[in-house]
Length: 145
Image (cartoon, rainbow, N blue to C red; front, side, top):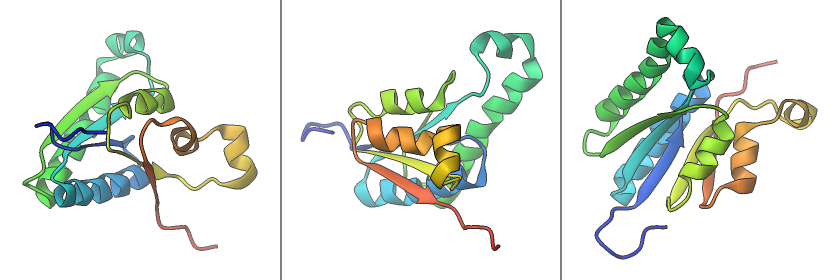
């Protein structure tokens, strides 16, 4: 957590290009404005760095996720300071590491739930259990049955 020194509060949000992650981003941007916090947008690529070097198109697509996220924050909350980071996989590990010293970690949930979550593993589930700061999990709109 931020101390009472000169550093602003720090909110970390994970984005992966999915709708739930962008809903988490929007929530985190509003919260950053309310808290006067710096917003750190983190994207853990699906590909290892070695693979991105072999496929420039994939690298460009991965970088575009952060470009879109940054533009969205600036349009919603222009006063919020935004910093972006791209890391390699796995996403849960990258987010847990980024949570060190943060005031809040925000992630979206794809909402698998139940047995599917246990089988697949869930980034939000891992963050909730291992983050080093409070975690907010934003559930997207549930599809109608």
